[in-house]
Length: 383
Image 1 (tube, rainbow, N blue to C red):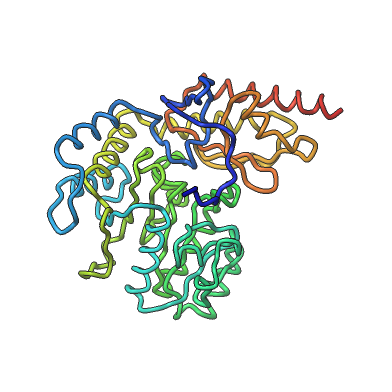
Image 2 (image 1 turned 180 degrees about the horizontal axis):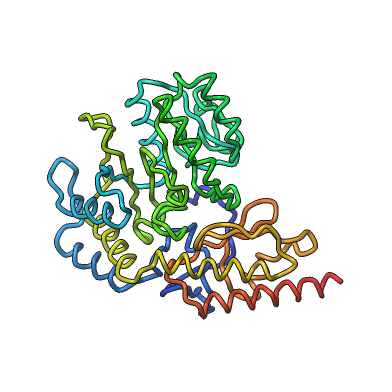
């Protein structure tokens, strides 16, 4: 049997990792500014995270949700404190797509409606309804096609309010990323998110804040939607939640009441996953990583704006994107294979930075200098 070929792969095999560093099977060290799609939130192999998982593994690794699991209660309490949403409710699952899937389902149950508003450039996952709310036809199989999803322009409050005036009584939910990740680090404006809150309140719809990439402190606030000063009805989260251990969740406002059997999961909230997630929150709290992300992210963005070849530097905290020019189309590959720095990308020419929230000033400065050098080297080669 061979692997089903679904991703274009870099010719690199990573064998070990520590902090913001990874090493390949040839012993080559790389600076990791991508964290495996924003997953590594507190650094590779953090000792608190390792010890939490090891200690739990010795006790019990898994039993089903048919029993009381105190770790789930501890995680809900800690998440409420660190996120500032102490009166919300937690449902645990396994991935960002599953979190969004359950959020959309819960919104439909709550409102008894079918229509979902999503936005151009959105990426909400690859499962059935989540992928239908994703703005990429290549991901949507015929079975996923539905008339229940409508795509509106991102950051266009007028278009949103106009649609609500026309169809508000049929809308179950609005789902929006506070910062579009796969869409190229496109930041939802405060005014736009406030408009979503206002429209949902006026028409009884559910505001779903997709915080899978832009949550867990990455933006310099726990959820990037918090920058707008509004509360969502449901927050979805995943990537940084377990620092590499699969776990996801929904943080659900108290006015949305649970009913038995509407939602369910086999592996969600298992003992090991909760141990990993508790370790992440403990480290975020004890090392003040949300404030660190805000401070270092501002420094990196301001430094990037001083590089004349780059344009449209954007983001919050340590979720940063910038555009690079047509005459250096191989910039990201140059950074990877010549400077040994992992970054992310978006089309057509966007570099995405999603490092550990514990990234050091020294590593940030190394990246900035290697980026300047790479631009100069590529421009000289093409002259």
